[in-house]
Image 1 (tube, rainbow, N blue to C red):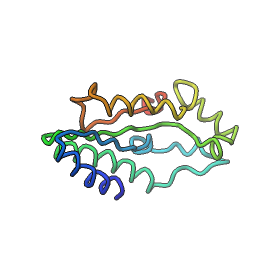
Image 2: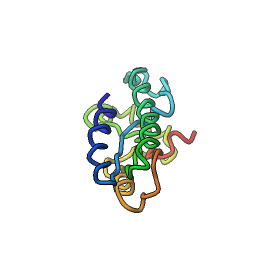
Image 3: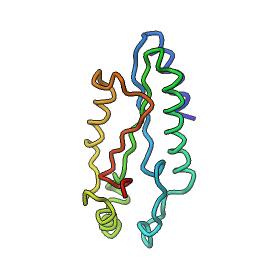
Image 4: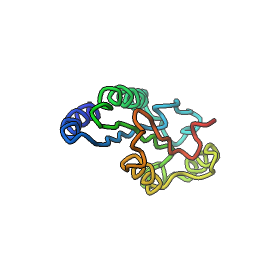
Length: 143
């Protein structure tokens, strides 16, 4: 609901301006399901409602992009992969080790690594990019 309402309200302003870029955030679990083996025994996998909501954000992006494109508004998504919170999952050494083995790049993401995708989608360099997603996951969804 939040993604929908935000785009509706910000989109009104952007349409009046004739330009704008809306960037939603999804998750790797909007693209693939969690591997329960990653989380046992110390962590719980993300619940189904999380993945369903994040997949819904990706469909919302495509839908909104179609209806807002001719008014000069671009709508895209960033799909982060394994970026564990350092105070929770990131503090669990065994879980971290399983993440590193599962991620093709052999490491987890750092918050600043999302910034490049945000800058690109916000800039004129992405003036012909709408209705898509940029996956920033160290190769997680490439398996």
